[in-house]
Length: 208
Image 1 (cartoon, helix red, strand yellow):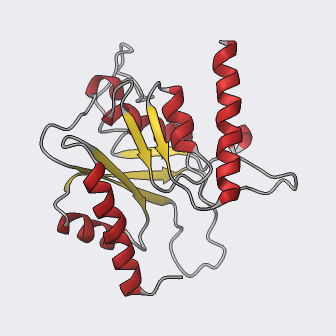
Image 2 (cartoon, one colour):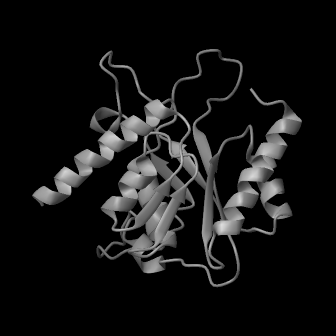
Image 3 (tube, rainbow, N blue to C red):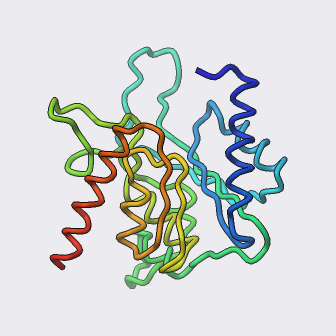
């Protein structure tokens, strides 16, 4: 619904607000696609964020290209920005997430997984669906993707903020990983879904 200038203003505004509250060694991860990655990179750099990496999420079960007018859209990008110099990066923890191992079973370096992350679009039990069986959110992110990001750039009891919480995947995973969290979401229906999701997690944690 944005025209181009309004989108630039919106992007700059929320990035600037994020920078103000981010710790001096904090990290900012932005999920984007080919339509807005250029604007995200430019506006973030204008505000002084340092770009550390651009991760590629390859959707192994991407929707087929029905129109046959373009290549299949099978990737999204996660831009990792940092504020300041002493950012957190839990290298050894993240290595454990790599499903690929050396010949003797040891943890491998991360380049064969984390720079190019192969994960399916959310499906099965993880997909949130309404009574009609339809997905409750069009861009629900895999919990594994959030696990990688949160483990990489935070420690237990740190605060994780998601200013576009949606149905609560970030807060759901953050709570599982013993992080504190803050979520912001303007769609009241998504807020209700996120609350219900977190209540189920609390019950699960109580049972363990």
